[in-house]
Length: 511
Image 1 (cartoon, rainbow, N blue to C red):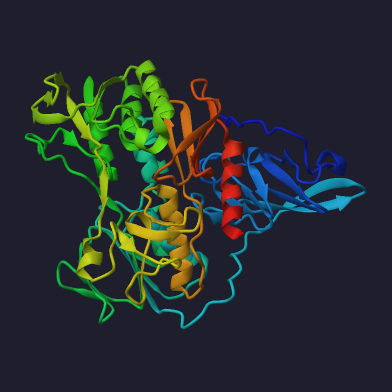
Image 2 (tube, rainbow, N blue to C red):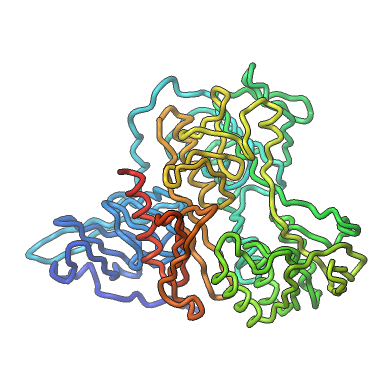
């Protein structure tokens, strides 16, 4: 039986289009054979690239062109228009590129170009290290290893992970995969063959006991030692564990790893009700995912509103209403004080009943190794603009790193997936001797049913919230300001404005 194909849309670019159909700065989607192709015009140059983001398939025609790059409207990945290279996480795979010819005031797209390795960048300082060790198998660790090989680093890469699974796309674990809407092959960031093909020595279930900075060695729990010339600490964060009576029962879960997610999914296949403790982004994404499996969900949280600390009262009220519309029952300004089998007793005196419990009461950075190694700490591992720690040749990235943020002028630590990936990429360059400051504007996204929330920047505190649009109508841009200056922007279905806010923040940093 023939496979069903989605018929390509737009003009046939092989046959050509009029140059006047693509104004300067414009974008247009057409096709070459069966493939969708995006045309982008910059002055007299026209680029032809794959039309969808290689991360989650976002439509790049709806994105923003910045100089010779295009940014995805969904999760702000960035691609080089000339080469198709994925310049910025969360995308890692490049876009296809086609040759373009301008003839008689018409644009013709020719053959797909053969993919070439990215050009090695100039300007590294010092000796290239022979041995790089990465401690951590999460977003930052993976992104660093991938970037090192993309930069054609030829030395040894050893990656220690205390997880049993290779690096996974963790946002999926509380979103589509947990909801049963994504296949298992979406979860790994790369297939297992990626590591052997790229000569990345990934060691799973590996417990690093200490770092001997004096001798330049990583010491494992079994006493074995692995030498390094440069070391990246990317140990991430771990869930805060419940300490109430009954918290150690097998039906009480946290969600961080693939194994955690699989355990919750197994419970969900036969469960009728669940209690989620906490009203963080992860907690409410879990609540939404479980509701999509037709499980009754009660959310217990100490605050007056969900996520008010990050998004403010108006967005908090909206998120609560959205979840209530989808059947979630909230118990706010309340906490669990004991778990006895299926019964969860709350501080208010209410007793709830459920088949299982998911505790999402926060995470804490895993800084034990850094502390034992004598690195400078401040509610995280202190790094400079190049992500270097206080010890020579040791870098840190991801959830543990507290870095000088040029946009806010403060030292901040951010527990977001895309930030960790981008820091891993920058750390990789700097371990190779490139002096590249980490200046990316923080970004994260959250998904609740069919409503995505994008957040750009960082606002630990604000004195004004300015709303453009209508939060209740799911069409808004919310600016978090301090002293009249926008520090962060949250948006719902305002992708272009979200991207433009990111670009504006970058330009403020550059000036």
